[in-house]
Image (cartoon, rainbow, N blue to C red; front, side):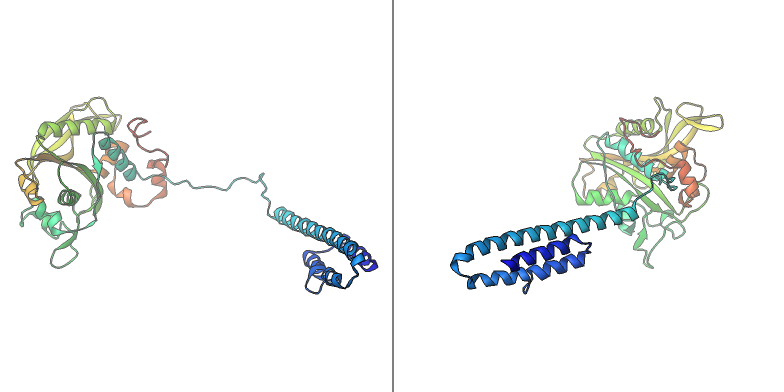
Length: 355
């Protein structure tokens, strides 16, 4: 019994002294390890007389529990102290001024695409996409473009092989072809995206953005086209009235074809869309040519439809007063900070398209 009391007193004294974590763990090993003092005492139980065995085992368990609890408590205190010291070193001084933070903006072209998609989704159009690299058939032949058409020339189109079979799409109409080849009518889609032509000046860029629309169904006529475009233009420019005229034109993929002008006036040096005695060309459109429908296995006697194409960059320039198309692609943060949109300004016909 004197051995147990001595073990207890010695280690209680040791544990009350200032120890680090490794020293406490060493005390634990000295007591409860394979050859530890408490472990050795348990091995003696079998050699003690039966009359003393019960009391010895009881006292030994009490000492073991007391020392074990004290060790665990000591370890916990040391770990808490270490954490507090670490936190003290890493604490943040909230009295310091905040660092400058450059907040990003949504590009006007991206915002305009979202606005266009929001408007057309309200009248049942879905958004379709396609690859920038196209084949000649989808970009020209399927769209009823003659072999000698100027658009096929190398000074207008970026070809990617000597056989002129692969190219950068010159419009997003190939998305319409892909959609019609892969599904069955009716179709009611818009296809926004990047397009490429060999052209560059203040109002033209080798890479620009277009949205093209297509509506194919039974008994579709020019009146549906006019109604659709009238709704879109009023919603996009956020005006109650719009003067609009259709001028006869020619596109290989539509017949009849038209170019659409809208009325505007100049107020305080700015273009104001809506009324006015001046006219501004804004898009091309027409009824889908029967040959195009035949090329995608759609019966032109049963189905008719209209198509239109709009320059997204041009719309953004008109709506937001941007004078030079090239500035869209110069990656000037100052320009984007001026013309860009807050990321939470998601266009909606209910909340308003733009601020």
